[in-house]
Length: 265
Image (cartoon, rainbow, N blue to C red):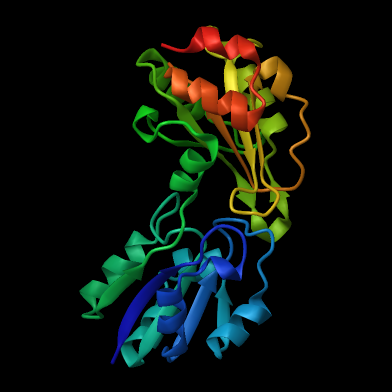
């Protein structure tokens, strides 16, 4: 049977795949995987191939975006094709165009969900999911954008947290650090002067969610900007109005200062 099955791999290594996803892969004719949208610190391709008992074809951004996924779609026309994606297939990144193109060609599609950074960060931090506003990606300094700053301002106006995903170039082994992201936003604050990002702005830095050694550090920017979070990947949260339970969680889980208690509502 020809079909295209999108399978999420989770956050850290090949063990993040669900049992259902692994069983689907074992019965596939062809398996593809992309590695450019997220960094999985302990991922081992050869071990995943052994678990699936299948060869996995790693594709580039060019194959997927500039060539419209033709290689994947052609394989899916001929048999059961798996597309492995870090995290959850359609969260934080999008392969929606590929799925739409498959359906237009009459190729059935399915999704086997994986652990997403969006939900994992909420679980890890102890913050309340319904208190988050729009999510934004902070780019590298050489490609500056006002959007992250504007989103943080908009969310803070209505008391919501902002999850900031930090840019990466996996093929170049480059990852925007929390330190760099904060300094970039400070430069934007100097231009915009909306008093949104000061040294006393409350933030949470996160590294390697899903790893055996994740890091969670809450504090004011002056406390966090020089903190050593270790290896990537990284995320950053700008805090809005906090429920007292959120403050308790950050003090317990993220070494937040007791001064955070004055921030609760």
